[in-house]
Image 1 (tube, one colour):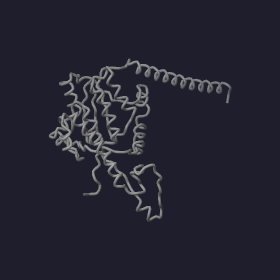
Image 2 (cartoon, helix red, strand yellow):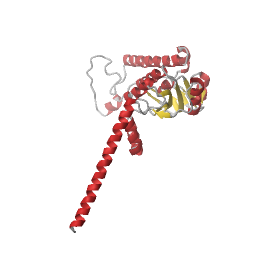
Image 3 (spheres, helix red, strand yellow):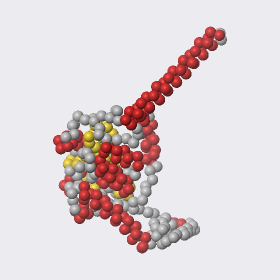
Length: 308
């Protein structure tokens, strides 16, 4: 190979490296500018924020913080909460309900139910000033469930024993290795009923109903959107178009305002994420969802699998 050819190849390599470094520098500067603009609110524009709540609800600190910040964001003129969830943990539903309620204290909030908005999903919905549901939406299921398992019989057949040294008779209640005691059952039932009363109070306060009226409907059953409307659990049949029309007519929020989804990521991260990892992000969410760990007491609609 001639000297001129070697020089030409070296020059091309240098140009390629220079191109890569220039690209990386431009990208870094762009990310920095987007981050600064996001913090300074330079890119803020008047809009309706949309919070999408889907799947199993668990406590998410970043999400509740992001929702709470909407209350003081002057660019957010209203909040639209779209729910498609069978429910989740009581604590998770309470945290998101309270965050949305803080927004509702300062600006219009409207809830829109999709296919399912039950249990903790309904708990979140009642934080809105108006609730829209489809005729076939499954909602309600106001109640709390605490499940446990017990395998002492199986362990006994296998010749396996388990011992627990506790500081008190209720420390290991419930236990996987021995049945619930009568005292343990009473205490756990008291926990469930206390959380149930909290749920009932949330609904009664938000829906202008008495606790007695709510309890008459809150035996854990689900209702269709049409049934829920007749019972006063929702306000109207419809979806996002009807919710936007209500915001415009009743709260003066222009229907022409754009809608922006609430995200726990910063502007720079959102921009890069949308540009570089749309498909991979969906795959990652799917994998992580499979690993969600159910914690404690739940407000979730789960039809019996017994066939009764």
